[in-house]
Image 1 (tube, rainbow, N blue to C red):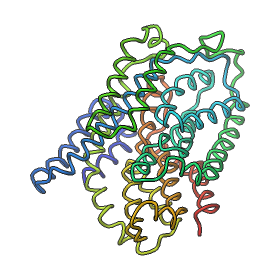
Image 2 (image 1 turned 90 degrees about the vertical axis):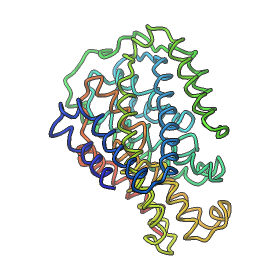
Image 3 (image 1 turned 180 degrees about the horizontal axis):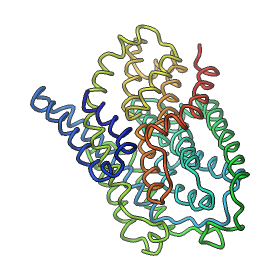
Image 4 (image 1 turned 120 degrees about the vertical axis):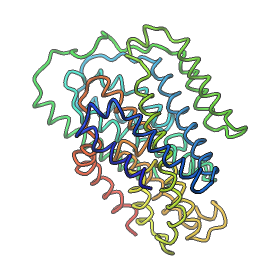
Length: 410
């Protein structure tokens, strides 16, 4: 697991202590460390199966995230005026609801550029961070489409509407608290901001929606999510939808969005290293989680366990590891029995994976993509460490604790 620890350390510290060097060499670091782990599996363990499984998951991840990035880049939402705190809250709430229909990645990629344009007269890092908290993570916890870990639960036999039925109070509390915190911060910063003329920060006189044809490609991509056989048909449809979108979208729409492939290129390279190096960590978790958890199916234990590891590992495989561990601890013969006996624990696993995925840039796929787009727009984003200590600990952690006290403390 040393290469995984080194990669996390490099992503956390290198942009702070050697920013220019990291921009030039991050690909070598990520792919080099990933190669070390893959070589260990091939030569040391002579085991191909974990590599094939990780490669399949990586291809599925990149095609989904990349497809949503390309298709959303062909949709231009023109905004009018400057973002005021109450309107910003309404915008984020809309994004949180859309995340359950388009997925957190789809909603984030569709709305991040309008969000930046709406607030660019007084844009601050907290605007992007709370967008990550709410739209790219917490909002999508009501359907399997919303967030990848919940989709894995659906594939394990959890009914489509089970999460909405059991987790809507947790969604309402979490999203409501985050919106209230954001509103307080935005009101405070608006009062301190230098006054700007009305309408500053927007290039459009009216609200505008261009690239409507891409909604069809978006529907194809979202429909492909539910295809599992034959192998790679799902990914092939996603690539075809993305290609169709890219080549049929007018250049003026791409230009209005400032569209290019750099953000998805950065995400694809870094997550190639993450998916490769985290194989031993996930293997250890699946092997030892039942022994570590003991025979206690405590909602709080599974909530915190799933959550804390979801912030450091990709939250989808972490969800799956704890879900399977719960089946072993509970001695449940199937998913239906598990849901009947331990509904609150499964809800804790679901909410832990979704909510804690917002704590770091690598907790959930769209987090890093939102950061990459914000970087491209010259917004000074917090580093990996700064995100945790300046935002996740003071603003997100209290929400996570309140969720635990209200729902999972028993």
